Length: 283
Image (cartoon, rainbow, N blue to C red; front, side):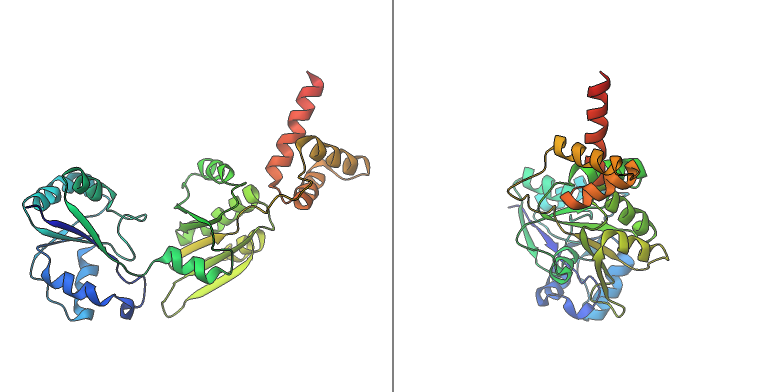
């Protein structure tokens, strides 16, 4: 008989948010695979739990190498508990490889539901929650990040991202460029902790705020693209509007920005339409 893999959600800040079942699973598991064994020790001490099973590290650096070992333990009938530093394993944290290996071997996989930074930030953002998409961490390199953001610029769903504090300002500025300066968003910082903060506003405004430096664990929630009205603007109309503004004396850059704001579109989309029309005319 095979064992069981248990994915356990852990507190994202306040230890009192730990689900009651977590303490029992920590005490009874044959193996606890922890992203950070030091954090696990602090958690068990806070919960008054003494693990009976062995504890092994399971983090990004050794995930690929350790997965077969844990899969063998599961196949041998052991109960393996997987915990990460905060939240649910495999959601931008180690876990996917082990779940896939367990499923492949026919091992039962279950979960101890727990706090989620994604859902907590989404609920606190004040933005639509009926449809959303979790995008994880944006790419670190500026060019790749902007390209990835442009891929979802027209998505109508609310978008949720994780980001490191030292990259937040650059990411918000890239979001403003890809989605439009006025796209509503919320930056959720230190959720459930002492200095919890939710900053709401247009992306450009949030980027200026973050330029002074932001600390803590960050989740960013961005409103989806606005619904198209009955008279949705096509590329030719965008080009015409820019031309009208230019003929009235506006510089092209300002004209493109103004038209993008009127149409609820990223500036890049209007710029691309203008460039495409110019290339067609010259051709």
